[in-house]
Amino acid sequence: MSQPQVVAEPAEPSPPATAAPAAAVVAEPTAPRRGPLSLARLLRHPVDSPEALESSALVVGALAFVLGALIEAIVHWDEALEIAGRGSLGAFVAIGGAIAAFGAFVLGRMLLGRTASRGLPLDRLVAPGARLHWFDVVALGFAHAVIALLGWTGAADLMERSFQGAVVYPLPASMLAGVALALTAYVSFLSAVRMTPMLLSLVLAVFLVVGALAAMLSSSDPLWWQKNLSALGITNDISSLAFNLTLVIAGLIVTIVARYATAGLPARTPEEARGRRIVRSGLVLIGIFLACVGIFPVDQFFALHNTVATGMAVCYAVLVIGLPWFLPSMPRVFVILGYLYVGVIVVIAVFFAVGYYNLTAVELVAGLLIFSWIIVFLRNTGPVEQADAAGGTRADAASVA
Image 1 (tube, rainbow, N blue to C red):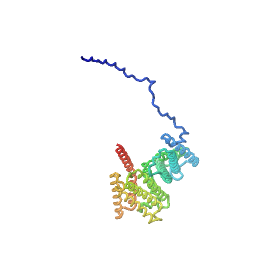
Image 2: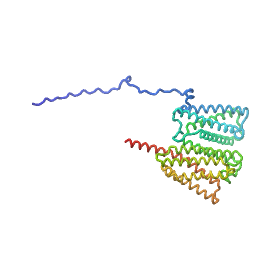
Image 3: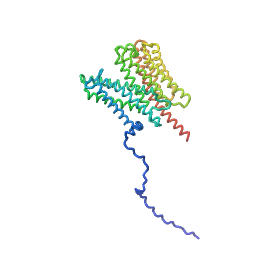
Image 4: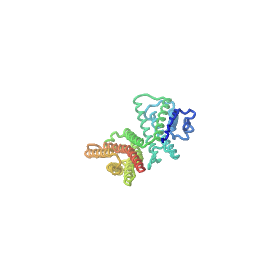
């Protein structure tokens, strides 16, 4: 006897999906929009955000404008000024710009330090094993001041040559002085709060070039180059002070660069940690020897001056030759570049020994190569740190998998 077959009735088609009514859509919570940055909030947190940072820089520039214009109006009241030279508008702007640059830079670092005390990681120069001390801030502030001083002096000389015989009347002079000081303070403040290791190397390069050129142009002995580069530091004029101070401040900046250039290098094994310490110590010694070259002029401390100058070259050669063993992770192209630099220094030293080059040429070329190598070294350590961090992340992911 066959079983009755059960025929399933066709299912009714489901109603088409319709959009939910607008009232049923629940909006995701969003952060409340903050209104325009108020002056009260800016005073409480001057560098806590990009908006506050730019506003603070504008406030610093405005204060510099008011002070610069007011002081210029008082000092040169009812007096037409020359564009350049002693007692000119250019001289006032150069000196005032130096003061504004130093003050704005120190102020910026102080405000940034307040954010660090509240646990905000806004300082781009904070790295494991490296930080700015108060004397580092003073040295960098002085470097900005010298760059502003000599930069505005050069600009005034150029304008004097362009407008020969022209004078500047009191009201335009005060306005021009205020604008120049405002621009200087604005740039210096932003440099302080946005300082990075790369920008630090740029400050070192510009400061060395500007300081050396200032010493050369202001030397009372036009034939200083026939002796040696250190002859710039033995004259009894402003060039001697400019040259020696440039070397001392540049030496301090090199020690800062040394700490940041080696702070993030791989140190996972005892050998890597030891190599990093050797490289950092060598770079710091180069900075100390450079400062000592300016502290001990060759005419008063002949033996000591030549010892520290030679020691700087020896430290550099040891670092370059031993770099593949000290830091095996450094790119081979950079290692080869260091070998070429040492080879060029040896060649020009031989030329000096046979009388083809004088000592000034040897010192200029060697100094240029050494400091350019330090700057390029700082730039190459960044990719090495990133590659090491990426390798560590991959290793951690592999261990978890």
